[in-house]
Amino acid sequence: MNGSIAILCPILVGLLQALKTVPGLKKRLWLLPLLAVVLGVFLAYAVEGFPASTGPLLSGLMVGLAACGLYDVGKGVLAGAAGTG
Image (cartoon, rainbow, N blue to C red; front, top):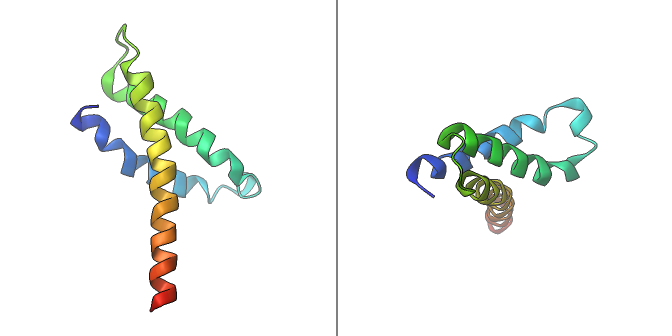
């Protein structure tokens, strides 16, 4: 994973947050991890192009899964900080 792929994780977290405001998606939040992986793969191919290797596919999977985990961990940290206030 090169530096241009590493920046995709925070971008993807922002996109997922924006998708949460879509009215039809509010009732189906279980789709967000799937959307994160799909968007991560799409963004990885957009950044790296379409080489013959599976590099962008694996990078996109990692970015999508990391974006989901980053949001969940950040939400837990903020909730814990607010509770200990």
